[in-house]
Image (tube, rainbow, N blue to C red; front, side, top):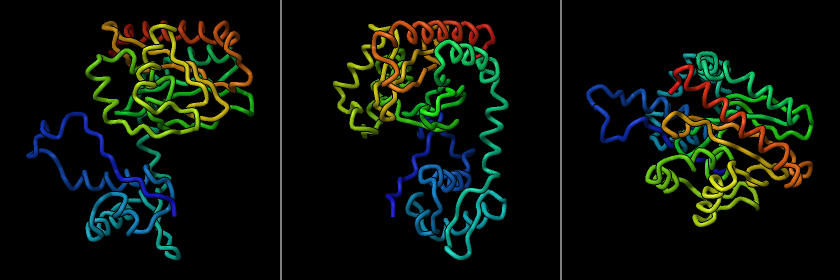
Length: 275
């Protein structure tokens, strides 16, 4: 059996600042169970869900029954396992449909895709990860398989480092202190000096570059989308097969497109009052 990853709930404010008179602990527990399936995207028994969510079986049993009754989980009577139901896609799709930035920035991603003929992504920072929220695929079958909503550790990715480089130093250090520096590939930089150096390179090079650190065989070039205060709002990146883009060609053809697109998107974010 694969290792179960424990739930890590993210809060928009510190737990100490939460008004317990308004906070619904039952809802938090229900979300913890759903989050367990996000961290462990495969069918699980009740006991496995309880372990992944860090909760007792009695509470998990009631939550699983409720979520199943609501159509959010599917239960296999033969294997006694639960899995997410298609209805859980509703919330993510509602976010994508309701986010004006995704619709308005898509033409810029499409334009960049036509110029470099490689996959172009828009990402946001979610705690210590970056999340893919919009994407224009390369037509090449060698393009890496990443889906909307997928997350990777910010420290190990080009868009993550592009964003980290523009955060205030204390905020960046606090984020890195919470990160688990686990290698995604044999080429992932996982020591703090290596990561600090990679982030420092962003200001020197004008972009963040990660070579085979997230997906073997891929190179990623990213730049942050900045608000008027210079703080990062999101990031754009081009992902491509490393073998097709030696350094000189990448610097000449991809880097300018990424930088120009990020600058234009920064203006769009400000003009549309998304900051």
